Length: 388
Image (cartoon, rainbow, N blue to C red; front, side, top):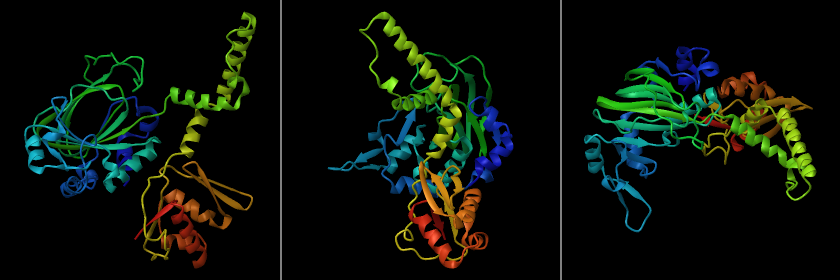
């Protein structure tokens, strides 16, 4: 699914990631057809019926206050398992409670694929939460989030008032949480199916039901800051003997001043040698793969039909380096070394992400035995999955 790198990017403009992400409120009307496959009522009902979902993953809110889980779920005697009580859940929802289901991307593949697509756009980990409400109630008071969000309206409608930023670039761990919502209104409107908005972190907003049902997904992600870069620079200091030394406390004043000056000068030098771009590149190289199980072929491999798809598991583009008769393929901080003959296959997968066996057979210039061996290695090392 390429909702974000496709339709959203087209409507939000080519400057979105570079200039507007985390800086401006963005509203686009992608169209109901673009989001229809993200979550259906049968899929949601199946999730609620077959998973052990309760607080803190599943919660109900009314008027900014969490509804006690005991009002709509029951703990099974002698176990840690909870069961939703359908009639009680229905009652709370009829009375205006908002249902919040965190991390639905870990439960529902279409939400996971959309999250993967957004991760490729923003280069940050993304979590997807579901919000469901009937009526004109307000589940939460006017608030700001300590992370950036992209909201996708799936069904019904919801009223949003975006007031703008309070403290500039607030953080979850911060020196000031006392800032108030500004008197301004940046945007006031009703989201309808297919509408997508981006609300930067620290931007105050008020969300209310519009009198009918509303179901939306919130894609949340925390971007790296200068504090993250500085923490990474500190990690590099363990290699420096000067920084492993005890701080001078009891020597002469002159000796203490000399030691302090040496630390400051060395820190400035090392910081200059470790620019933010290197930090971001190093982090991208360690970006995780989504842990999708792909049995049975990783255990007993059989060559699939030409129509089957091979899809790489790397969320960001893998790093491919070719030298000394080999090709190095780096994913999630781990480098795999392959024979140079596999370079065309690996580059095609990295560029296309999902390729049929038939296309690989033609483009990779490998005989059947070589192709089968390559695919078996990629699948066993969880570098790729097969989709029949």
